[in-house]
Length: 263
Image (cartoon, rainbow, N blue to C red; front, top):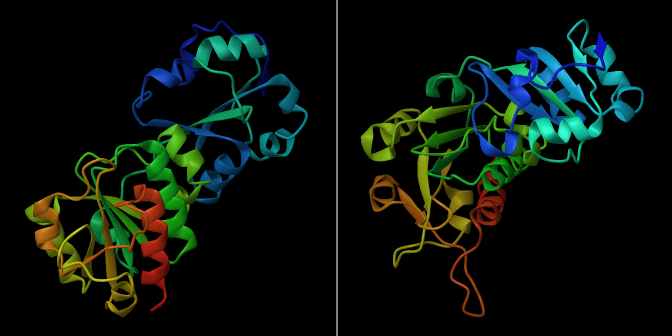
């Protein structure tokens, strides 16, 4: 059902309001942006609630998607009204309010995993999404989130991941020093910290690890000492020209490639 004229203050549109200023939306709801990301969420069985779409796309690139959505409301106010509502000009043209799925437990997410990524305090949504994308592409079976990691279902993280947040099992995990490491080791994982240390091995150590769990730290501070102390091995990526580190998402891709060689 396409609805062209609606008051921007209507309760039905509040999930889309001021998206650049808030992380969480209505309780139990998240926003998926772009046709590809929305389709990935639908493929994962996630329930759509409503669609906000630029008018030119309703009969254009979003037409097939709208057919798949069934009877949910499709709001197509003027472009300037969408910008006023959301706080920015849509680059992908389509937003979908979706029902937030029930979170997996760590045991559920790890049930069929033989290698996984573990993030500690990765707060930047772009980095988080990029790590999910690399994890899906390069052989990780699950993603664990420790500490103050951002929400994988945030609009930007899901978009940057190109929908990988809906294809990979993920769950929140206690800090490694507070029981998280035991959960992973009990399942047979070798915890591999990506960190600078005098004892760090080369990245080829990841390919030799049995059931590697690649542990990545915060963008600015890296892994905490407590997390490194819980890991079985420490790995570093050799650098040149005075550079001592990579962006965490770039480092993750290299580490996932090495870790995925075994499987």
